[in-house]
Length: 265
Image (cartoon, rainbow, N blue to C red; front, side, top):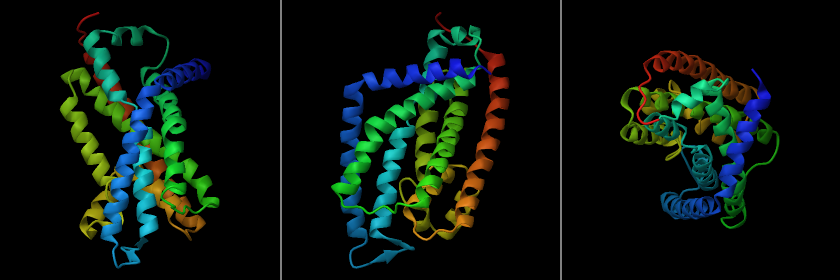
C-alpha cells in the first residue's frame, strides 16, 4: 500500500475542512450552547450530592462536555458522502483509481478529524477548562487517552463505513444514519455516563462496540487513580473491537461492491 497517496488524501481533506470557516464557527457555537445546557442540567442533578454513581459533578461534567467535543470531532459524514457518490455516479471514479476504496475513505476521515480537532475540539476544551473551571487530571492518563482516542476514531469510522455500505443497496440512508447516531450516542455513554445506567444495561453495553468510542477514552481521561492494568484492559478492549470491525467491514465491503448500481454519471 502506497502510504504517500493516502497521506495526500488526508491532507486534501484537512485543507478542505479548514477552508470552511463558517462551518466550524457555527459548529463550535452550537457545541458551546450544548455544553452550557448540560452544565446547569447536571448541576441540578447533583444538587445536595458530592458524588453520584461513583462520579463527582466535576467528573460527570468533564465526561459529558468532552463527549460532545469528541462527537463533533468524529462527525465526518463518511456514510453520507458514500451515499451521495452512489447517487451521482462518482463512485465509479473512486473504483477506477489505484487506491483501496475503504482506506481512501479512512484517510479522508482522518484528515477531517484532525481539522475538527484543531478548529473545534481544542477551543471547546479551553472553554471547558477556563470558563467552566473544570479540572482534568494531567499525567500518564493523557498518553493512554491519545492512544484510546485513535482507536475510538477507527471504531467510529468502521461503523460509519458499514452504514455507508448500505447505500449500495438502499441508495438513501437518511433513516439508517439517524437511527445509528441515536443508538451510538446513547449506548456509548455520550449522552449519559454508562455508570448511571441500570446494571442490566451496563452489561449489554459492555458487549457492544459503542462504549469503546466514548466511554473508554472518557473514563481514562476523567477518572483519577487508574492503574496500568486498568489502562491496559481498556486499550485491549478497544483493540479487540478495532480488529473485529475492520474484518467485518472488509467482508461487507467485498460483498457490497459486487452489487453496484450507478445512477447519473
